[in-house]
Image (cartoon, rainbow, N blue to C red):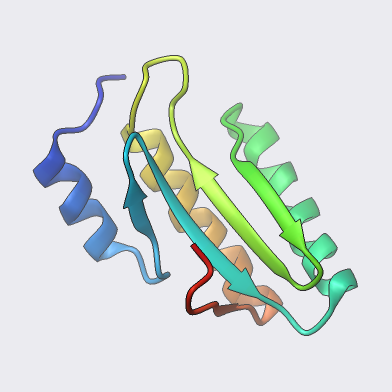
Length: 105
């Protein structure tokens, strides 16, 4: 799978419903949930999805805030796999009642 060009990354981020942003060779988003257990539940759901497609995000948990960071490390940048997983994370986060966390990056 080839790395995406800058314009493809920009277009892909605009299509995602969540508050994703580019961070160099990765994309990231921070969400907030009601409490720690809700955050852990979302992480578990994302982990299951990641295992299904064998593409794993970097995840940072701070109480009820979760930061997801996606990159195709083996290729050194952002691919369609990252945008696809981001969309799946958005769906799972919405289902869990997460909201975008301002200043969470």
